[in-house]
Length: 311
Image (cartoon, rainbow, N blue to C red):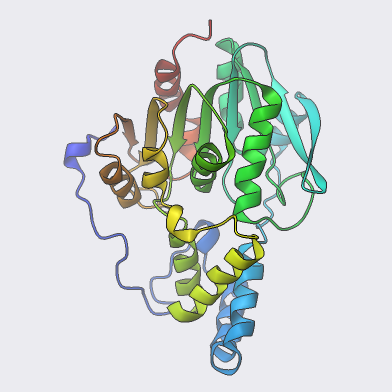
């Protein structure tokens, strides 16, 4: 584990690279042939029809990418008890393993219930019941699209259905949604473990805009379209992870990798700065990236030490 004292924060919003020059090649913001095609489309639309460009950005940002389920994930899901929870005209796929105090797992954008699946066996062996679910538009849950309010409300709905939550464990974009579910939708947990979080939901749209070459003004139109279509349930200014975390009271463990290529370590510094008056535990890894820390044995031991005994 790296010591926080050895890490040097750098600006979160450095000048954007020109399209194709130093563009990030990982995760949601990977440079692909489809991205290069979209860049050409947006280059035309932003001048000829900014409104259409904003609508297309909205469509793309509310359509989670589909990631193939790995064989070990499918096997883990097959071993689970499956529940179909009615939600927003469709249903959520909810899975559980083991018995004991409940641990609720929340995946990130474009992932699925079993993305945090390496944690299931250690937690079950430690005496916990582990519950995971596919968010709207993800995995086996209904729909092909998802808005941010739907994601947050779904987390709260699953939490209500499973009863008292001993520990909430969330990853990446799922952290912001899980915190929002607590602040606005009544989700409750005794403690929380938050992996690899971005510092503000705006950052996702800013990165998307940079990737496809959209001017900030057009991207802002797309964000406001999300607000209008959410029937007043969404306010971008409130979606700061640090601010949301500051409004919760549960003991909290933050984990991040110093070399995370998808959500840079500076996001952790920003969250901590906004929670300067709130006690937090922090664990920083070195070289596990954005995803591998979810299955690392040493990280899992740190998480279990924070959670305490299941009894």
